[in-house]
Length: 293
Ligand code: BG6
Image (cartoon, rainbow, N blue to C red; front, side, top):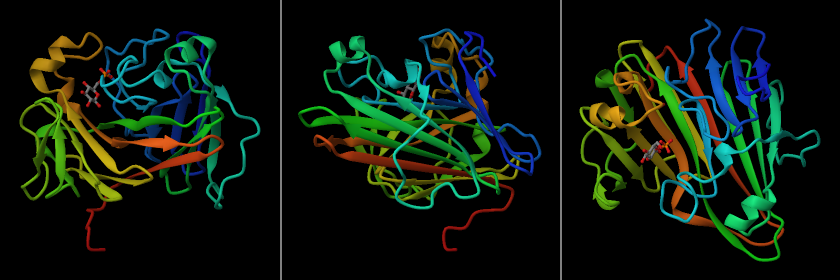
């Protein structure tokens, strides 16, 4: 299929009816549905689909910068670029995609990108949909440059929830975090689980491999598993900030939460010829989630 700009999108399906749609614009996952056809990712009703701007929602690839701490545009350029389908990706280490439906995408820097960020790389993304509906994203960055470079990375993931006031995030208790609302001040999480009653924009440091987002109203639990990504960003713009975002509805903060597997605090350093891998697995289930299991 194609999006409004005529840019290709790839549709993955599993035999039970689950699906995922990936756009070559940004290598962005723009839809992920369970076997019942319910959309699991948030997309703003006001999202603009105008290249090169990234679409507000889904899963955005933030690379090689996260946020505005750097010389590049917010969250780096990968989410604004047109990727290509990678017909012949280098082999994966494990039996990663057995029984899954998947697509491989590739981003290489253009001349223009190299002027902004003078490091040659190949960024590969495999998105796969499993028989049980799990969605896996594996990103691999290869340094094909003569010198080392450093980068940040995040899977900026907009999860759809029914009411943010009823949402709990588990797995980040007692962790240190950088509070992006107060100049990245280092604070420590205290409570049992994270709940939401105002704007939140935090980078939890050295977070566990598994974080759960519980949507009580819908009785849905998202489980986010990550590898190679030490940090977790949690973001909800709440009421005031929502009104300042042109591509986001005033009330939409109620129906989304961003929980991003990321590498932010310590940039990844990649030597020439070396490759880095960052993996995210998303599960959406009806059952309640228990960390002791
Ligand atoms: C979050 C950041 O990940 O993304 C926030 O922590 C930011 O600070 C948000 O506002 C949205 O960014 P953007 O560039 O997509 O509007």
